[in-house]
Length: 195
Image (cartoon, rainbow, N blue to C red; front, side, top):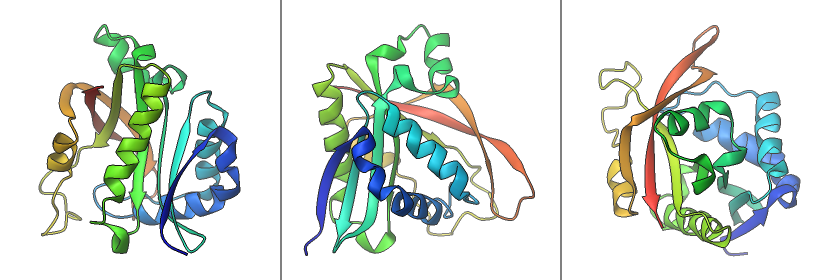
């Protein structure tokens, strides 16, 4: 079988949740996320997207194996951590489609799959009549001890896709970093595109 990229709405993606959880834990271990994954958290996280009206799961599947995934849902259905910066800035969350993540195994990168993830989530936003798409990215200091010497942020890729960084829109998510004994808040800032 060839590599395919398919979109699923809501609970239609539930047969893939175990694969998705493993994929998220694997990819997010790398810098800049450094996420010490938790399968129970992953199941809860994925079920939130599955229950959301208008959500989308975009999966890259190679020979029956999920090798990449991205999610999105109307921001109005997102958590307070996601909505609060927009509300504080006078922006209506119901005007935005929020991208949860894009994760892809390293061997599959550079093949246009990341572009397809953006295109399919943007198509879902258009179907729902939402004028803006947005996502947030973690911010790590340039001197972080786990930052690889050859690390290149994805900013140029996002800008090429038409996204503008809005550092004034900031939030914090809590997770456990590799080698840490507990969870701690991590700063993230948002990127926005008007469709």
